[in-house]
Image (cartoon, rainbow, N blue to C red):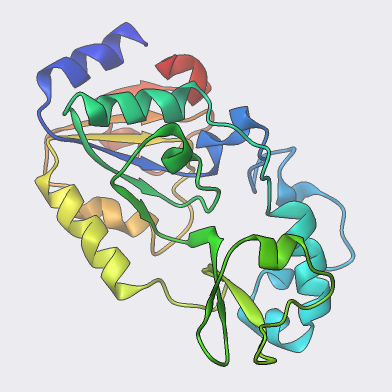
Length: 233
């Protein structure tokens, strides 16, 4: 691990990690806004529109075609950043992970206290009867996935035009208020309201690890512009 980062971790008692898509790029999952990201790929319909609630409701078949092809990476494995964060939690240094990702790689690495701001591809529910469905209901179906009751199965991911879950936001705020070290990694902090949560951090030290500049760089005690997996290996 980067020696300066290690110094901050050594002296902290309750660190919190706040991460985004860049945390998983080294696991082979593309981010959204980089040159190679999902939003940069040529598409007749902009991905931002496809991933909206209104598009989901008006054109569900096209939504699920895109969702299956661009949002689900079941073969992806945790990278050194995910694994190191899980070890820090096991060692009692990290009290939780707040992630904007929906890929479940933090849990796959062994992290237990993970707050998923934007949901998870592994949770899916029928919009009619509420029955829970595993990811196979999406991956092993074609077209619009249906429940036995006939209702559409919707992934529990937050789409554009949808609100974040108030209970999840409350959990994130409480975690940030308890922390004495905030590690921000793999996120541009351009997505709100998620990025706005950082205002609730009451500690002194903040480490920002991201390849590009973020809106939080000026508040950082330590700024590292390198791949997060490399930094935390």
